[in-house]
Image (cartoon, rainbow, N blue to C red; front, side, top):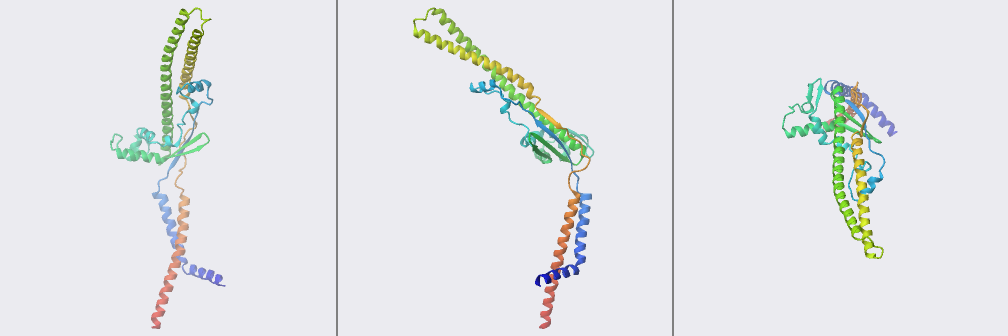
Length: 320
């Protein structure tokens, strides 16, 4: 019975304050509609699907070179340059700030720095540059699905979003090519230097073996001379193997320089979105509408509570 009375009291409370319960949600809904229609800036998102391609199989020559202590390029141990830490790095962001884009709001061929900060590209304000770079990094969203990365950028214009994604992908591609080319060039220079040194050592060992044979025509009856000849032969054999491995590895590194220069593939190119992605105006209006209903119910409860308190005080005063 007490539960029924409580529900009945709640119904009576709501019916008494029906105007408040209807007026507050109406006000919040109207304000939310004005907000999403005139105050919120729609964000248009464009994305591209990209993948970083690496050499698949580890060759035997790389393994032999590693056993010899030679630090050479190996696609199996290559660092994946396509990851969120690099995509959203300050290095990439600073390069993007120096690129030009066409916009309806700011005009054609405007630097991204100017678009994001409103200042001239030549501004040497370090704080403004850092803030613009941070703003651009916040505009980037990344999602990984297997080996595929989805890079998304949102801006106030659909075409600008497309241009930003295209430029970012191109900058990442250039960064990866530059990195792999530099790494392979360093490996090639190291191998070429080792080839020169090994060739000198091999020639020296071959001369020593030739001189030994010239001086010692008959060594059948001398164990010491036979042991010395074996040592010289072993030295020449080892250096010959090292020299051959280095030559093979040099050719492999040259091939990798060409192969890895094209290790960045675009699966889906970015397109200018037709509709905005953010914010979801319907959800905002519904949220504020429900919030208004909750506020209306609580407001009616507090009003009734306040009235009952005042009524109690008046009764006490009348009794006195």
